[in-house]
Amino acid sequence: MEMNVDGQIVFVHTGGRPFDPDRPTLVLVHGGGNDHSAWGLQTRYFAHHGYNVLVPDLPGHGRSGGTTPTAIDAFAEWLWRFVDAAGVEAVHLAGHSMGSLIALAAAAQAPARTSSLILIGPSDHMQVHPDLLTTAAANDPVAWEMITDWGFGKQAHKGGHQAPGLWLRGGGRALLASCPTDVLGSDLAACNDWTGALDAAANITCPTLFLMGTGDRMTPVGASKGLRAAIPDARSEILPDTGHMVMVERPNETIDIISGFLGDIR
Image 1 (spheres, rainbow, N blue to C red):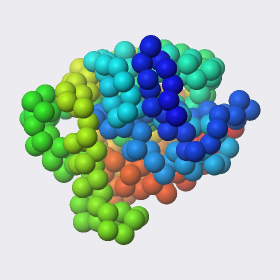
Image 2: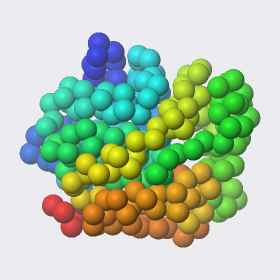
Image 3: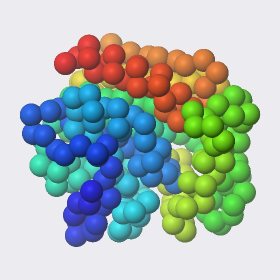
């Protein structure tokens, strides 16, 4: 569906279900240079298992209009304006990679409105390799190769897609290639520049889940050690043989873990 936020059209994937005010709402936030499609299987599952699911293409990404924010805190402020436009008071927030930083910053901005927080592939400080920053800023296709090489685990390099004949890494490259000019470079710079994760963690009061992969070379498990220690009673789940693209590489396991977490706090 489409919504209007800040006078701009925002495309929102809902999993094919109409909004029901009696259901809890789960907002899924995609990573840098991505769009709603990164959450495809999770969106449909939770939409058909008791939740309103809202998965926006962030401003300037995918099918959404507007200009992409250039800072994580600005993304987080936009996210609450998006939630307001949807007519929802409290939401469960989940984010992947850059989206995990946005979700964390948003939860810190409005703790009373955050029912739970799910961080997939997060980091205390998401430092981006200088070569990747340079190639992404130049709109060089080499950046797509770097991200899919580093971002997918070993199994995903060989195959592993649930649909026969499709290739996880190739799909990831196609998604990055479809990203509007300059957006990927801006997103990566926003991640690299944001140093507020640990300060934000101090304001988190809701149940929190960390979901990571042992083979993640972009945000290794150890990169979120400080965050995990800073949020009281946070739950951590680490999937073996999994890279940075956790919900794409391990969609069913991701669904099971998130479903169990949400079920425990309902």
